[in-house]
Amino acid sequence: MRMITYDIIGDIHGNSEKLHKLLNKLGYTKSRNSSGYTHSERKVIFLGDFIDRGPQQLDTVLTAKAMIESGSALAVMGNHEYNAICYATPNPHQPNDYLRPHSGNTGKKNFQQHAAFLNGVQHDSVLYNELISFFKTLPLWLEIDDIRVVHACWNMQKQKQLKPYLTNDNCLTDAGIIESAKEGSAAFEATELLLKGLELPLPNGLKFQDADGHERQSVRVKWWDNTANDYASLALLPEAITQTLPRDTIPNLDAYRYNEDSMLFIGHYWLTGKPKPLTSNVICVDYSAGKGGDLVAYRHDIGQPYSINNFITSSSY
Image 1 (cartoon, rainbow, N blue to C red):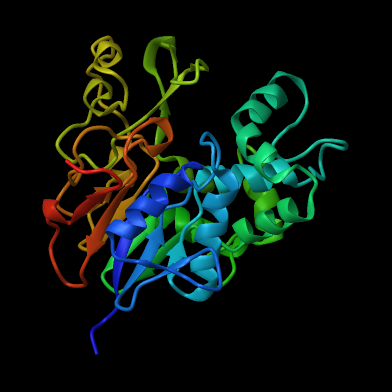
Image 2 (tube, rainbow, N blue to C red; image 1 turned 90 degrees about the horizontal axis):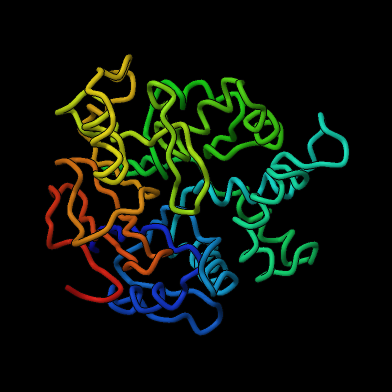
């Protein structure tokens, strides 16, 4: 009997049409009794971020949920599932508001970012609560066979700090959700790193606008790149912005490097172009499906080194 191997799929963001195309290309068969798909020899691992942005929110989540519940797939939590949980969870320290605020300018921004999902499932409905409960079952990371999977950044120190707030399956407990939403707490810092990646304040008070027009004073950093140490080289920004950044060395960067042997799969980073590994053992499968790009999978056979031929896209190159 052949060992089950894995198809790791990147951020979908409510684009189920791309998901159905990709699953068909990967050889999965539509289930007769559910919204999911099955394969006799392979299993999907989703990188999270099922929701927000795209036009097919409900179909995306129900397809993934059916596959996970039938054993045809695994998944980790993305920052958008985490945000959805916090948006739905009352803040015990702030009466009449939620862990992810609904009020003020921040609440307006949070609603805009989450509106596609809320409209798709009808806020306050039984289905809405069911899906929030489903999101809570998603672990923050997976470590299976010869691979590791996390939405944005693998960091064993932060994972250890989170252990008191996790189930045995690395899912946040209800107390962990509340603690992780408390800005400045160790649980907050750890969850931010695992789900959003390494973000550092820009030097010299620099600011920029992100893709949604929001002003940012911090920048995502290519923590997987062991060949550079400065802001200009490691900032995940358009070249026009990185050219304005200094060559100052980023402090304490070694604490975030990935120097393990296990293959690591991540999403989150809105890459573009033809898929390729980030390093010999770090592979990102988020190629901006939520912004018109392809939905991407990597076909991993246990014990085999990476191959650029193992990337499969919802369209084709």
